[in-house]
Length: 293
Image (cartoon, rainbow, N blue to C red; front, side):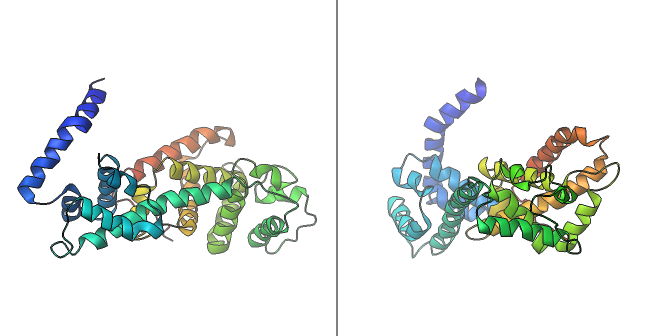
């Protein structure tokens, strides 16, 4: 109750007068003061909040700008805030970097969501080729005897036809599995081998798809903002999402064996524990969860 009242009064009264007072004292608007004080993800995050909570419609709309309109948007902001480009030569550069990150994050979510919504289609030749590529990457010395086969269990699928395991994450789950196996082949083989441990083993492919869901949910909830704002100076792309997925796969395997669960029946408990650990790391404004091997 108290927090809600504070948010209301701060948003409607105190913030306005505080900004006005600071402008009189410094001769700079809030956006300029943020650029003078902060760097990295903290800077972009504060700029985003400043724009979003502004009562000025031009500033509010800046958080929704498309990349092609960023330069025009900056000109509009400078005009609205009476910022002289000759007196503050760095403002355009800093604002452009922030707006590209902000708009880029939003576009990345839309791109990921678009892929996630595409179901695996066994009649789609590209989907089938990608699935067979996954087998070849993970089992280079073992030939797949048939498209529908019990052999799929060897790389952690539940049934004879893997397509049924992609329902939740669509083709995105397969793309992530292939990306990790192709770009970190040695690590993928190592983790697949560990997943067959007689006591601590788990279903490699199923867990991989589960981690796709984790990466997707963190992106959707905006928990990845600090990470991506620190990692990418410009526009984040699908490549950066795939790289974060690889980090999750590598770290989850370490986490699982460090925790030593009694059985796979406790997977959901430890999955959630791992999820909470990652969310905690992502709260750090200086975070950058890159896979280091």
